Length: 88
Image (tube, rainbow, N blue to C red; front, side, top):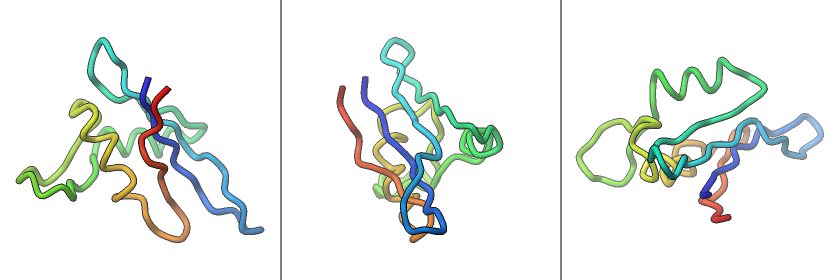
């Protein structure tokens, strides 16, 4: 099941996993889990910018793998970052 980890920078310079977003194979939708429900609720409600140039302005978890692939471009600051899609 493909997934992406979203990391938050801690004060000591290490990273904590803030959220894990997984592609639900049967439904084709991304489900994000976090100890911070506000973070995951914002992803569902507001979506993320589509950096692929496909013409769509925002992507949402129901966009499936495309949403998962674009997380690393959306979260690319010094404080928040996302992994590439990890296949398992």
